[in-house]
Image (cartoon, rainbow, N blue to C red; front, side):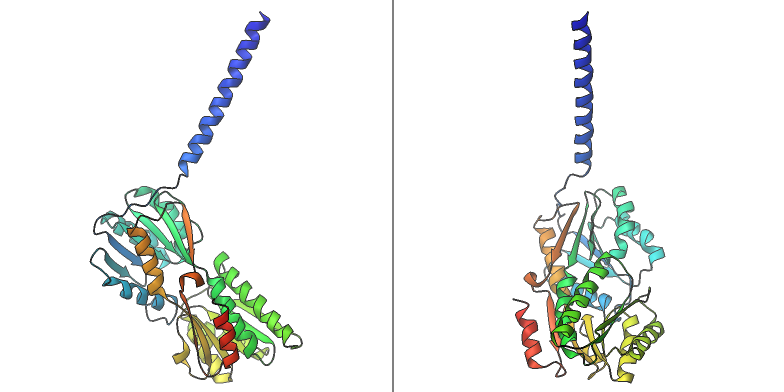
Length: 328
């Protein structure tokens, strides 16, 4: 009788262990990396959230698309710009239902909607450009290592300031934005200390907009009024207003993402431009070569030569050389 009870107990425990193992296997299978297999002559579309003439993120992406549209005849590459957040889902679903093979979403703001939509279209692949997550067997993210670029910007800003007061103006707060801005702030504070500038101050503000130029000007003027003599801006069209304020007050600006030097010569001292041609080439080449997996996040940066510092005469030669040395 005792042996029978022991056998039943062992059998029950064994059954429980098997059930747990099955659950674990099911969970693992649910997150398995899937090799992204390109179609022959794939149809690819890039969805841009803003204006291609914003002199920042969207303009850079647009230039990158153009650089790759006629690269070869193996890919049909299109784009749609000025897609507002309220229309994200409808636009994505339209392209997915029109049998596009790869949909590239240009911005981390697409992460949530892609996560909710991608499962409905298992034969369509989704790429989030500048995403930090990838949720789905048919979804991957590629991001520029922007903190590497903001480190270069920090070297410039920390050497240009005379007051030791820095202004940082950005579009929206998110993990990626805060990471790159934290890097810039760390660098300018260190350089201010190295140069023995007393009372180094870093002012940071988020416009919670990519479009409001007047708000950008207002924020910049407030920072300038508090002594900031170098502004670091990553805010798309908002940045145009910031640059206008800087120009009116004799303050220097460091451009980011796109070459903004010509917007205000003598005011924009340098820009850290992203080579979106190389970014899109990296994505499309790896996609066509079957080197990408679902549920994966890929970073590209200095090693892939996607950041280009563009200086004006406002930046001393020795500072330019220091920046170049940090890219090796």
